[in-house]
Amino acid sequence: MKKLIRQMLRFAVVGLSAFALDYVLFVVLHMLGMSYLIANIISYTLSTVYNFVLSMRFVFSGKSSQTRLQQFVIFLVLGFIGLGLNELYLWLLVDFAHITPMVSKLIAAFLVTVFNFVTRKIFLEDRTPKDSREALEPEAIGEALGAGLEDVEVILQEELNIVTGKSEVKIL
Image (cartoon, rainbow, N blue to C red):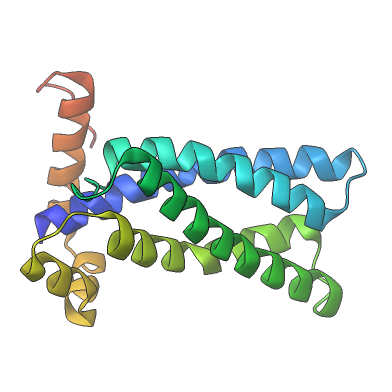
């Protein structure tokens, strides 16, 4: 369970940095007069490539039966499906719900995040059969999301120690 929580935290950090890139590019391109749907395609695509590099290094172990090129192609295919969902949500929110593109982008990104995590875990991660069942069972996901503050703090502390190479860095 700690492995899943750690992985979800890493996914969140990588995802947030990729989203920051996506959102900033989206805002800049849209403010420069580009259609919000075209700006979304460009920003989402660039952030997907960035996300692949970080995800395969820090989040998912990668299937040993796949080359990096195969993993990249799978990641892009899943990313483009996510882009399609993102475009659909953005279009519905802007054109039908009359929500500004900037706010709609936030909502669409949130809605696509779950799809991204689950599909990348299924198609890109090398897992034992027990790990794959455990990771996708609703109870396991609920337990991971509902983990106590102490567990999250311990995991964040361990990750911080790994990143900094120091054991005395305190987060809380």
